[in-house]
Every structure is written in structure tokens, then in C-alpha cells.
Length: 187
Image 1: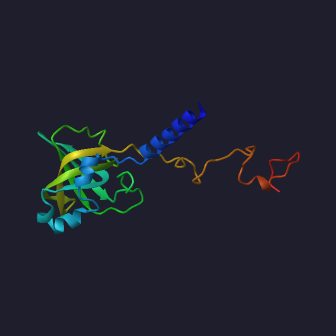
Image 2 (image 1 turned 180 degrees about the horizontal axis):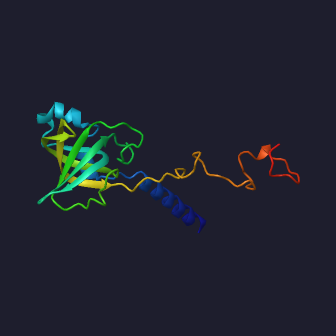
């Protein structure tokens, strides 16, 4: 009985660990996709990459629903090796667009959401950002993963950490307090 229970616990832990390391994009697309590319590197050798499957991601800038397609403009960031999520603290490496044949809700695919895309390089498109011309790499979507928003657990605290009441046993500055009738006053 205990041997069977140990096996079950070991199997459960293994499944949890493997589930935590799962990639957002399917194995088939990851196997054939070119990784670690930036929009600039694709533009430099566009004819080489045209028609190839690439894996890229970043933050959504804008979602435009046109008559027959949806274009999502993305600020590209490097992806994590472990789960393909865009790295939070990394700098951006240019912009690219992804073309979808279906409607994508601009509220769901809103500005600032993180996204990972496996897509085929189909064209380059010139458009304006303010008054400057910018050349975009356009991908035809094959698979997309929209990431849940990150939680900033200490974002609401004024000093970057939670405020503890003075009576809390692990109050950070507890050693400065005197236990006396005037216990609220610092010594």
C-alpha cells in the first residue's frame, strides 16, 4: 500500500514539474520554427526568411480589425527558453505585425498584453510611426498564445513592500520599539 502511494506521489510531482515547463506553442510548430530572430535581422535578409516559420513575441501595441483580416502590431522582445513568454525586463528589438483571417477583439488583444506567435514571414510593409517611415515584417499567423497579465504583488505599496502593523510579530523595525506604557513611541 505505501509503495503504491509513493509511486502516485512521485508521478504527481513529475506531472506538476513538467506542466510548469510546458511551452506555449505546440511542439510541431516549435520544431520547425526559426527562433531568436528580430524584425531587423529578418529585414536584412528578407528573401532568405520569406516563407519560413518563425517564433516571435512581445507586447501588443495596437489591434486593427480590417474588412477581411485583423492586424496586430507587436513590440518584439526576446522569449524565455523555458516557456516562450516574452521576457519582462528586456529591451525591445523592433516591431512586427501579425495577420489573422479572423476577428480579434481589441479589448482582449489590448495594448500592453504579452503575446507569442508562430507565423510565416509573408511580406514587409512600410507605414508611418508619427512622421517617420517604418518597415514592418508581416507574419501570417499559424499559432498564437496570449499570456495572462502579470501580477505585481507589491505595486500598491508605497515603499515596494507591504506595510505591517506595529503589533505584527515580524515587523521589520520591531527592535526599535520599547515595551513600556509608552510603547508606541520610538526609543
